Image 1 (cartoon, rainbow, N blue to C red):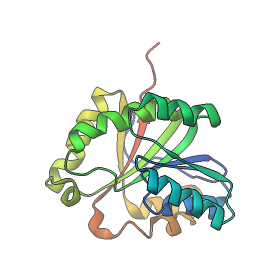
Image 2 (image 1 turned 135 degrees about the vertical axis):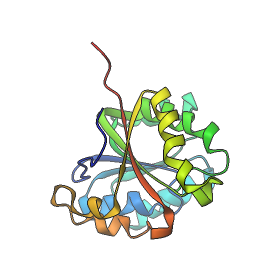
Image 3 (image 1 turned 90 degrees about the vertical axis):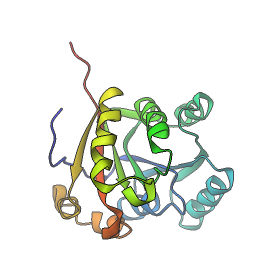
Image 4 (image 1 turned 180 degrees about the vertical axis):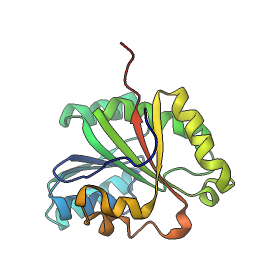
Amino acid sequence: CSSGVVSLCCCGLRCGTYRPGRGLPGLTCGVVHGSAVVLTDGNDRAAAWNSSALQANNLAGTAYRLSWGHKGHIATVLDAHPKFNLVLAADVLYGAWRSSLPDLLDTSSQLLAPHGRVVLSVCGKRMGAAEEDVVPGIQQICEQAGFCLAEVCRDELLTLNGCSEWEAMLEQFDERWGHILVLQRRPLSS
C-alpha cells in the first residue's frame, strides 16, 4: 500500500454511501455523473427519506437500511447490487468511533469491489478526539483490519483526474471538518 495522493474519480462508478443523512454526497454523485447510487443508513426513517430523495430527483438508485457489520443488511444490498467501486462516508464517526470503525471496515470489505475505495470525512471535535489523534487512531484500526489509509488534501481532490465536479460534492466539507481519508483494502499477499 502506498500513501499520499490517491487517484479518485466517481465518473460512471457504482457509488454507495454510508449513513448519508440527507444523502448529499450520493445524490450529487448521481446528478453530476449519472452514477448508479445506493444510499444506506442504519435508521429506517433516514433510509425511507433517501429513497424519496432519489425518486424526487429522478435518479437511478435505491436506499437501504444498513447497520455496519449486520450480515443480513449486507446480504440484502449484495443480493441486489454488484460490489461498489466507491463508498462515500461523510461525518459518520462519533464518540464511540473506536468501536464502530471495525464494523464500518468489515462492512466495507464485503461491499467493495477489488480496488474499491471508501472516501471518509472525519472531524476530531465531532468524534470527541483531539485532531492530532484522529488520523493515527484511524490508521491503526485500518491496519489491523487490512486496510490502507491515505489522507488527502481537499484541494487535491478538486483536481484529481480532471474531475472538477468533485467541487460540488466537497462543498459540504467545511474547513472545520478536519480530514478527508481514502481507505482501500490491502492486497492479499501471494
